Image (tube, rainbow, N blue to C red; front, side):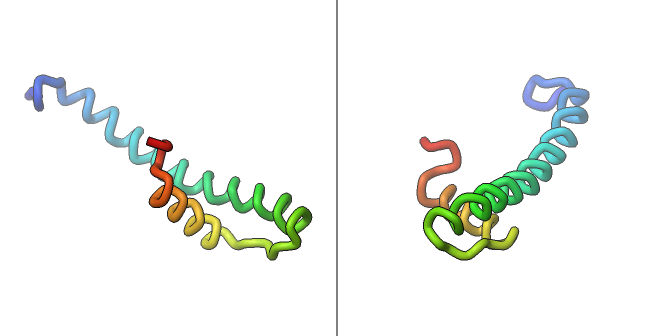
Length: 71
């Protein structure tokens, strides 16, 4: 069966890969941002280290304020 002119097999392969990619990105980016913050900001600006949750919230706020891809 075609959905919008596409073969079903395209969706069967694309959707799980997309979900896995989003989960990996949403897990890795806050961890990387936290590591980057905690290795730089406390030493340079005498700020406190942040947690994983705080890094996720900071990334989310920056995406809301500045756009996800800088549009």
